[in-house]
Length: 443
Image 1 (cartoon, one colour):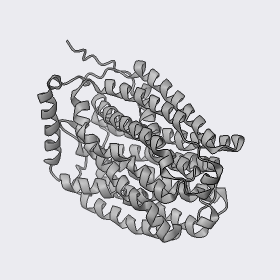
Image 2 (image 1 turned 90 degrees about the vertical axis):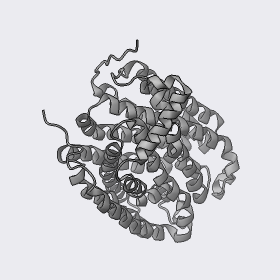
Image 3 (image 1 turned 60 degrees about the horizontal axis):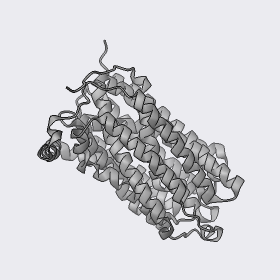
Image 4 (image 1 turned 60 degrees about the vertical axis):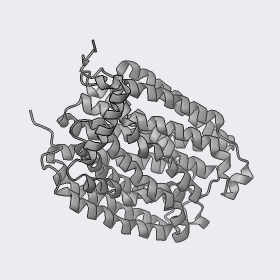
């Protein structure tokens, strides 16, 4: 007999650590890697291209998400993938190459030196994408709709706290170690080892802390291959037969269109020399400005966004969220044109842009939950997040080449023009959302 007993443990005991664990590998793979590769001499074009390839596991994860839905439990998958990611971080620390100072200074370190590193990153990304499927499905099974709306801001907060730790604390550590050792590869190896130790500790905590949700049970048809493939096909069929699904897909692909370009080039811009059009900040300064101050702004935006939506509903909040997602991107254009030297001004610009993004992204997260309602909600949510990853991956392929061609100022102008795409898809999708969706039910 299956144990369907739920411990009913207070969500505050596990949501913070679960979404910290969901966020940290994502930011290590997709964002911190850009800083590390930049500091190790890789060109902007190659950084944008090869780190965008790392998005692929998040794009194709719907093809294995039904197996997570059918085989074993979401809790089991969550813990297993955390173990695999812990191993991945250890291997990254042990196998990171050591290009010479001359090669690094050239700004054109061959990608071939990082072949093994990229492979391990990709495996870690695969585990992280699978973890996303399981953890997000677990979240939806354990909480009712009202609590989902309330905790969406909280989960986003701790997801972003993982970003503060990853893009802030870890990057500051790497920068300080660069200064101490005078050895960039050694500094990043040590930083990756710190990451591995922390993540292994979180994994051990979750073995005991994650409750056994009442609805988190293995499906009976998961016991046969026929049942697995039947569930696989059915999850896709039911998703693509949803009313208004194609408009939803367009929204998922284009809502973050300007951010998809900006996120790949912001850290290289902060690190690049003045001669290259950048702000020439030190590694640890970038960790403070972008990875700490910026992410605090993003986190506050996520918290406030979740609270506001839980009171007013997603439909009423969508327009202001879309505006705050896009318009603060003008700060990048300002920094590229004015080249401010004041850390205070740079920090204020990054904070404002990230606050708007955090507030606006709350709408995106809830919209994915809205589209995923019904049977196979875990698989359907995974499909939505795959489109989300695709929306970041494809523009990322071209971001480095466009920046090199246009310069940082021209690139900033292009980003502002892309904001009109976000506003257009917001206009068309807003009327399709139930006006009561997202509101927390008052007891």
